[in-house]
Image (spheres, rainbow, N blue to C red):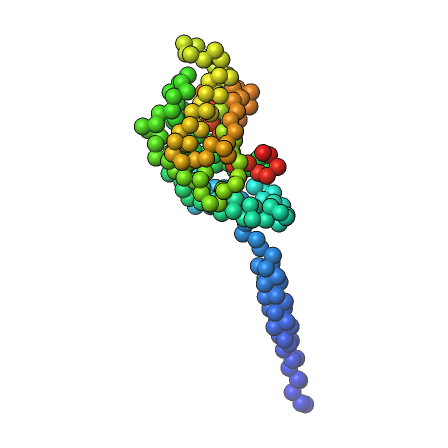
Amino acid sequence: MGKKKEPEKPSTAWQGTYGDMITLMLCFFVMLYNPTEIDAVQLAALTASLQGDPTAGGQSLSAGRLADLGNTVNSLPALDKGKSLGLAVKRAVSLFAPDVKSSRITLTSDERGLIITLASDAFFKQGSADLDIDATRDTMLRLAQFLSSDELKGRRFRIEGHTDNTPVTGTDFPSNWELSSARAVNVLHYLADFGADESQFSVAGYADTRPKFSDDTAEGRAYNRRVDIIILDDGHF
C-alpha cells in the first residue's frame, strides 16, 4: 500500500502583500502628521507624567485653544502665525522649565491662547502690587525676551491680574479691583523696561471674579492669586 501524501503547507505569500499594505498605511499617516498641531504644553506634561516626574505638576491638560491649533495652522491667512506660535509654545516649555518646577510659573492653554501664569505669592508680597524684582529678575528677563522673540512678532498679549476673595485691608488699595489691576500694570512696566514692546499689550484687572479654584481653601486661594500673561489667538485681540 502506497504512503499517504502529506498535506501541503499553506502558502505564506499573503504575508508579503499584507506587509506592503501596512507599510503603505504607515507612510500615509506619517505624511498626514503635522507637528505644529501638537499642543507642546500638554505633550510636555504627558511626557513628565509617563516618566514619573514628581516635580512636573501644575500643568493643565484640559482641552483648550491649543487643541484647535491645527485649525489655525491650516487656515489662511493665519498659516505663518499658527506655525510660529507652535514653535513659540515649544520654546516656552523649555525656557520656563525651571520656573514650572519651582511652581513660580504655570503654562496652560485655552481658547484664548497660551497662558503664562505668574504665581502672585512668588512675585508680590501679600496685599502689595510692588514686584519683588530682586527675587524674580531672571524670570522677568526671560519673559521679556520670550515675548520679544521673532516667533511672536506681530502678536498681541494681555496681562490679567487676579486675586482671591480676601478683602484688602491696611493697604493703599480700596479693593481687590485696584490691587489686581496694579499688579498687572507693574508686570507690564517691568517687561517693557526689559525690552518688551508696550504697544503689543493690553491690561485688565479681574479681582476675585475669575477664580481657577474654590476660595474656600488656602490652597485654592493661593492658586487664584495670580497674574496671567496671555499670548492671544488671532480671534481674541
